[in-house]
Structures are given as C-alpha cells and as structure tokens.
Image (tube, rainbow, N blue to C red):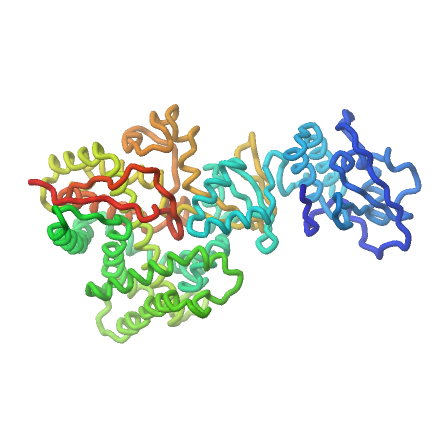
Length: 601
C-alpha cells in the first residue's frame, strides 16, 4: 500500500511548528473493523497497519478512545500527528487526500469494505468540522487509485501504442480511475460518455470550468508551437476559430464545387494506383491503406486550405516528413523538457523532418508578396488581425497555424480512410453492397454532392469506422475549479488542476452502450447496419464549441474516396488475423495491408 507524502488537502490543519524535543511513539493495535459508525482515529489507522506518533503536548489523556471531532479540535492547537507505513519514513498526517488514499488502498488490498465506508465518513466529518462547508474530495473510494510509478513504468512499454496501453489499463481498473503523477499531478482516466461530454461542452463555452490540457499538446508543440487553433484556449482560440470557420461552412463544403475539386485531386492518385496495379504481378497490388491515403489527403489540404499544388516529389517529401514527426510524437510527448529530441545526436531523421515541414515559411512569404489573394485559409490567416494586439500574426505564429492545419487536416482523415478500406476488405459482403449501391445510383461517373449524399452504405461505413477506430482518440482537459463529474449514481469529485484523460477507442466500444442489446450488434465488431437505426451519441470529432471545424469536410472526403475507389477497384483482405493496434496522433493498425485489383467491367 502506498500513501503519497506530497498530498495537500485540508484535514488536521494544525500550525506547523518545530518538532518537539521528545516524542513518544505509540503503535496502533491491529483489530477487526469497528462496528461503531464513528470510530476513533487510532482504530482507523490501526486497521491499516500505520504507526502513529504524537508530541508530548498533543494529548494528555487516553487518546486511543478519543473521537475524531476531539482529535481535530486538539490538532488545531497542538502538535499534529505523524505517521509511517511499515518500514517507511515519518511524515505529518497532512491532509484529507492521505486519508482517502489510505482507505481506498485498504479497500482494494485488504478488501475491507466496511472500513472504506467508515473512512469515507470520517473524511467527510473532518472536512465539515474544519471548514463548515460541504466536503469536496479528491476521489471517492469507489474510484480506484493506481500507483503512479507502476503506471508510468507500464506505459513506457507502450510508446508505440498509447491507445493499446489505455485499453489494457481500463480493462484492469475499470471505466474510471485516478493516478497521481509526481510531475503531472492528479490524472483522472475516465471513458464514460457523460464525463467526456461534460468536459468538452464546458471548454471555451462560456461556463468554462474546463480548459485544454497542456499535456495533450506537448509533443506536437515542437513543430506547431503552443499557440494555434488546436492548442490555444479562450480569446486566442476564438480569434483563430473566427478566422478559419467561414472557409469550412456547410455551404462551401456541401457544394458541387467542393466535390468536383476533391474528385480532381483524388483521381490523380487513383490513376497512379491504377498504373501500379496494372504493372503488379497478376494485376494485384498490396498496399497499406492508411499510408496510401495520407498522400492523397495531404494533397487536398495543400490545395484546398493553402491554394498550393505540389508536384509528386514535393508532396512525397512532405508526406514522409509528417510521417516521421508523427511516428516520434509519443516519444516527444514523454519528453520532460522543452527541447526537442531532434536536437540530440543521432536524431538526423527527425531533425530533417522538422526542417522540411518548416519550409512552409517560403509558401507563406510568397503569398504575402503576391498581389493575388485567393479566398482560402492561408489568405485568411495572413490578413487576420489579432484583436488583443491590433496586429497581424508574426511569421512564427503563421507557420504554426499553417502546419497545424496541414497536420490535423490530413492525418486524421487519411486514418479514417485507411480504416474504412481495411474494414471493407475484411468484410467483403459490405464492400459488395457499397459497389452495388453506387452502381445503381451513380454508375461510373463522378458524383455530385446530392448523389453522394444518397449512398447510405458509405455513410454507415464512415460512422462505423469512426466508432470502432476514432482517429483522434484521446481528449485531455484540465479542471479550472473543484467539481463533481459523472452520473449521479457514481460521481467522481475532482480538484482544480486535475487532468481528465478520456479514450474514445474504449468509450465507443462499451458493450452496455454499443452492444447487442442496445444496437443489435456486438460492440467490438464491424457492422455498418447498426447505423440504420437510432444509435447512442458518440464524439469522434468532439462536441460543443471546440468540436472539429473540419468534420464535415473529413466525412465528405471519406465518402467520396470510398465511392471513387469502389468504382475502380475490387479489394480483399491480406489477413483476417487480429489487428495489432498502434497509435500516435491517431489510432491505426501496425502495417496492415489490403490487396486491390482493377474492377471488372
């Protein structure tokens, strides 16, 4: 059992005076849990095997029978108690957190249900006695508290797949558990949908009791800085949001002009694929669908967002650089310093990737010098005036915003496309249904926006892929005040500064919410038909004001690529073995491939 010596929460708020010259140690006797609903302090710590010590002026009476109220009264005017675990060092009984941890650990390790309930009551009584106010506890006993050191050591074994680590952790500890990290403070890991939605809806919303966590952006900040539309908050975020949102309005995205532009870009890459398939042995080509889609969607981001078309070599170099940066993202996130790992000897590949991506400075400068200003996001960013300064963005901020758009604008959508194609390859009946619906409603022509919207199978596949494999799978928020979150029957109390980490990969596979009884299909299986009926809410793009402004475009790109792909190719699985999960910026498979052939007329 581990009790942190650094916990700070009010319990025995005696003045911290110098240690007395003489102290009398007293070993609390180990007894069964007392039936008395108001146990003495000694009985409580005795149950946990904790040795306690008092100064000579602390008590003058038989304190083993002293109730908690009297103990608190005396502690306010005399030397506080100290305690230690077997073999440990002496430490003050510093706070309510310590008592909470002792009780929670006892419940799990000693399986003492009654003691946990008594300890919770004692903790509540202590807080009420001291402050006269309702207690706000760091964690309730029903929320497991996981040892920070063992948690961190286990996490280090999953640097190539944080999503797999969190899946394992929630399977072991449940939907909600807390971890106290020495350098990060308390972290609440909670996959429940209502907790997620409470936090997301109350970020930059006006109520504003949550904010974006700096932990989430640390690894990416070495490339895109700490001030950009994805990592900023408050007025700074609103300024960038208002600058970019008009370029992704429903009127612009859901238009024949946008579908035509996307089709032109995608067809460029499909023609390349057709040539490679024709040249492959037996006319069958094996591809990694995610990596194949990255180049096509990056091309979309460059042209639609920035009005810049790269040749194949330039596009390939930029895609390779992003892939390297994303590959190292988890390790950069674990980097405890503000100096990138790319600065270390032997890190030339990562360093070169950053240099390649930072070369977008030239693209920005060329637009600034040009007399032509197309109505795209790049022009919007260049001409935007920060209301807090009255000045346009400087060169560094512009570069960070452009790189943020390119990274988020291509990686998550490409990952969604990769999962959709992989799932269709593993479920040939679903792919055949997609091809049949497209044949009946569109044929071989490029669809218009209304025709594309009539392909129900494409919509269902997009939704089911987003549910099973949400590309942006990890949301982190920091509590700006003490509060209670979660359902009334099982709330969690969090303190100001607590970081919430919620994993959509686990959240959207909850059998009680998404399983056979609720939707007609097992939660962990790919069944697009579940979306023929009303389904529970899910949040692959977030919710509230901070939801992804590019979600409509991302869905449109996925549906259109599936349509053009189904018109051109037959696809089949390379393997039906269980998928090995990887994750960095997004959830992906480890080098999973599919086979494609030109579709027979």
